[in-house]
Length: 181
Image (cartoon, rainbow, N blue to C red; front, top):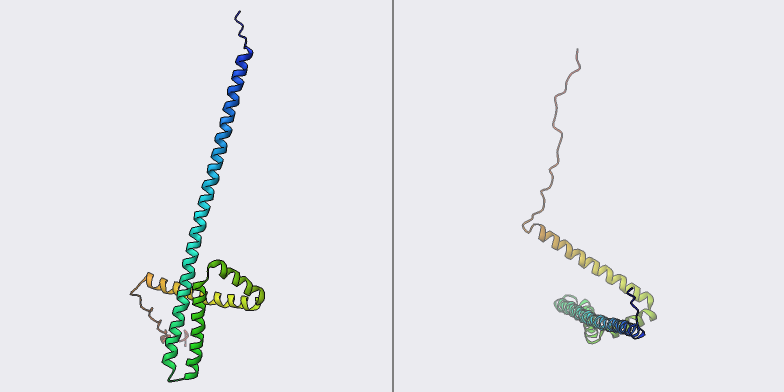
């Protein structure tokens, strides 16, 4: 008979090896978890920076557009000064306000703009909501006009207006006499 008996030292050795292997797996899992945390944190940071850069570009573009509108109003007001100085004066004042808004948006960071908007909404909620409503209408009309222009030019650049339908008049028909008359 061949009885294989495990000696206490071999059992301790297998147990020690299993324990060491388990510890290695735990260490590897911990390292992998830390690596994943660092990767996620780094990626989130990059996304946050990218979003901030895009928002900053949009803020600058908006300020530039408001500034261009102010310049156009100044130009229009200058051309109206001889015809109607009162309207020209008010147009210049509106253009100056738009220039101030453009400078304000250009010189503030996004956090400050957000804080200022929240403060305005708290102090004057009706004016804030009214301003949002008007801005929505203006933006909606701009988008609608741009989409219509894009669709019209993209579908057929040489497109002419369709011909108008000609009215049709009834043609005279022969009057038949009743049979037997």
